[in-house]
Length: 435
Image 1 (cartoon, rainbow, N blue to C red):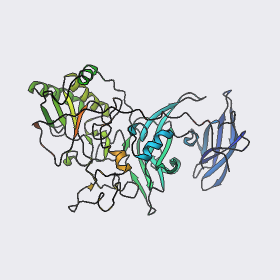
Image 2: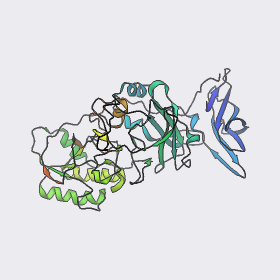
Image 3: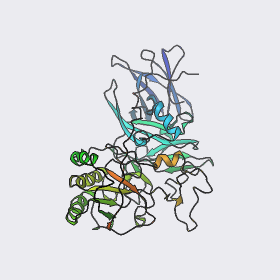
Image 4: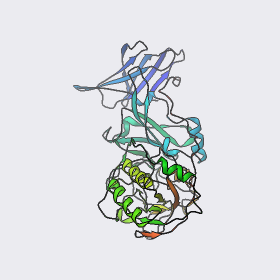
């Protein structure tokens, strides 16, 4: 309903915007000659304002929305004038549960588009919630009121999407889902690349500026046989090994220690985000985000990079077996269990522990914890558990935390990603026909 909709003739478009409690709304249209014309909107109903504007060559125009509340006035870009950032191939693969680069299309991803006003930077939000009745994105950028950022349902795929122009790194957000019982629930992003430091629970829009310097190690590893070479692994929990250190301090001290003691690999107990530190990372809420307790995701990259430069391989533990039942987390994410058989696969532990999952998980679980490494050097993932970097040598699972100390394990080759994603589409150049 919101956004531009072309008339049958193609020379005009109806633009609808949602501005509850506004006193006046004006649509500002900029043509190819950079001239701006004003088109006052009329209130239709329930905070929806409508204006009829000229098109540009038969396509929806570049416009902004000026809103007046009392004596205050603001001009903003409109999220609904942009086409979805997921392509048909992305949606097809997600529907089949075999998209191998979900972190590029789901979650929060930064994009830049050209415009007559100059480049437009913003954040594309997308989430897989097939049983939700509606989804909104809320955050510090809209006072946690999602009415102005209702997400669009992309057909029968179960994907909900919205590009928010002007929103950049550091923004806090969650998804707000209307479930089958009629209640709204705020949930952290299962594919968030960053999070607030626990006990805070919001997801964070992240931009990576890190430049890897481990090309020598990566090239050498590609020519080694990981199954037959010597291997000695130091297993460590970052939160209890020389407590109080961040990722960058660990990069210095852990690298020096492992090098001096002669280990070839470091195996990190789970570093994916988790709310309860006492779980040692074995109750995951953010499979795609390294825990913020020790720094920014780029700081974690620095830790892995330093170990590689020292000739040390990195193995990350993967914990897909269960996740905590916190109201804001993955359990019953869209109001239903995230696994194939609700009575068995998503059953709660009789001791009151976390919700269980199985290898028979459906696409929801697949989207938050893929069942095999797919890898990407540009990925911000924490490792082999979810969107692993090819820097990981293998993925492992543990039934309970273990103290740091030497151990041995078998390394497995990392599989490379297949580039199946379609790049984001540019701003809307066409629009649905008005009925």
